[in-house]
Amino acid sequence: MSGRLVLGGAPLGQPGDVGPRLREVMATADVLAVEDTRRLHRLASDLGVTFTGRVVTFHESVETARLPGLVAALADGATVLLLTDAGMPSVSDPGYTLVRAAIEAGVHVTSVPGPSAVTTALAVSGLPVDRFCFEGFLPRRGGERRSALAALAAERRTMVFFESPHRLADALVDAAAAFGESREAAVCRELTKTYEEVRRGPLAELAEWAAAGVKGEITLVVAGAAAVPVEMDAAALAAAVAAEEAAGVTRKDAIRAVVVRTGLPKRTVFDAVVAHKGT
Image (cartoon, rainbow, N blue to C red; front, side, top):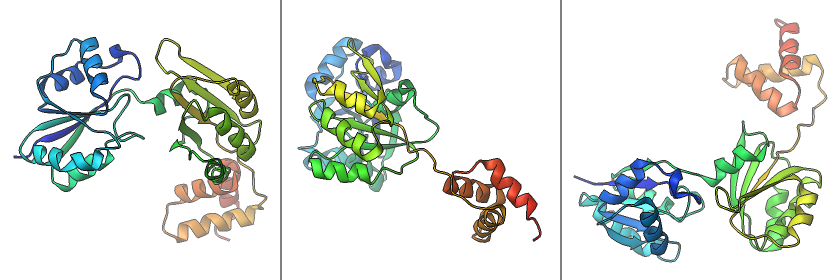
């Protein structure tokens, strides 16, 4: 009978943020695949956990080489706990390749959910969180970074990035050029740690602040592009909704699609549909 792969959410900074389930799995897992063995021992000490399982390093440099052995252990019935340095595995951290390999081998994959820098930064940013996208780390090279940001200039959702403190100032300058200097953003530094800091403001102001140098783990949250209403009369709006319906969606979803596409209030689109019903 195959074992199970458990993805463990490691604390971002405060050991007390993890619950008893992670302690239990750490203590009982047959194999602990970890990004950094020193962090594992420090976390175990902080949590008062004694683990007896075999420890295997699992980071970017050895990820491919470690896969066959870990999948074989899972196939033999072992419980493998995957831990990264902080947050949930696979989110801009090692884990995706092992998850895919385990699924393809028919192994049960589950999790002990825990802290995430993405959702934590979103929550404290003060920016809209009803719709967001995670873009991971921006490219290291300036030209590639500017191209990536330019491609996101019209993105309506709140955007979340990870960034190196050494590249933050340049990234903010490039973001201000791509999105506009007044676009609101938040730089979340050292989340949950002793020197936690959240700087909120226009991109240009944040770039000026970061120019002096910033330290620590950085999560950048940037507001999405404002909707620019499209000028359409009632007849054209009703026709657009009808076209969506003809494609096979419900009227409710058709109206929503037109609202998103045009940036017009939902009431305006709805009233147009009612006014041209049957015409």
